[in-house]
Image 1 (cartoon, rainbow, N blue to C red):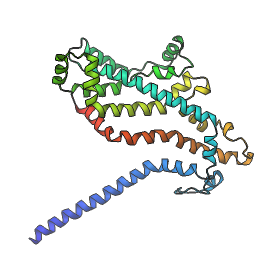
Image 2: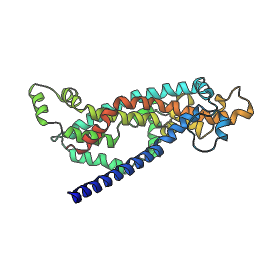
Image 3: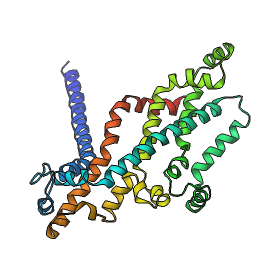
Amino acid sequence: MVAGRSLSQRRFASALRFDVWNYLGLAFLGFLTLYPFYYMVVASFSSGNALIAHQGLLLLPVDATLIAYERVASNPKIARGFLNSIYVVVAGVGINMAVTSLAAYALSRKHLVGRSFLLKFAVFTMVFDRGLIPLFLLVRNVGLYGSLWAVILTFAVNTYNLLIMVTFFRGVPESLEESAIVDGAGHMRILWSIFLPVSKAVVATLILFYAVGRWNGYFYAMIFLPNPDRWPVSLVLREIIISEQMNDYLGGVDVGDQGSVAETIKYATAVVTTLPILLLYPFLQRYFTKGVMLGSIKG
């Protein structure tokens, strides 16, 4: 009995030590992951001069001020950038989901002629990219250069997201489709009334994937949109952080203080542009993990 209790106690102590070190390790990794964003938020509420002079970890705002957010809110470029980004996200995600759903439904049907070739061709596009110069020439020749639709239409479908939905649709029972066909339903009716309602988790997950990509995308906007009035907010943020285009934000600021104010404006702009996606995620989070897992193991 004594030996038994001793063995049990040793196992309990070993499990306890494992749990403690496991939680400590996860807490440390969580801190490394979250602190950069926390630092960005705290720094955006700090005075520029105090922030530059501060040493070590930043846990609370130093010499708290709202001047950075006042400058961001008063700049029309940010407002236009937000409107452009919202337009790109709403129109783009709508087109993304329509094309992805239609293509996934067709590619998931066993009776589709050439299905195997089409799937292999889709995977081929993941390995061999189209190239930037041919894409630019195509956009220019079809008359989309300078329009937001150049960013929207050139990325109507993501192959990885398409394969996720194809895999999920393969797992939908064929009996549901056969029953609908017997009742006289066509393919569009079957997709809209049967496949999409039972695929809410995958649909929500892909909406999040597409929305994040659309909102954060700036590179192709930089290539296709020469007019700053049509820039999405992510490209405006890029110009602020990388190109140091701060003149519109620093009007009325003393020359000696412009460098410090510009530093906090960068953080404030990054917070403002990140916030919409952070607000969207909680509404789709419960579908996120489920959708990815179902889309990866079914079929």
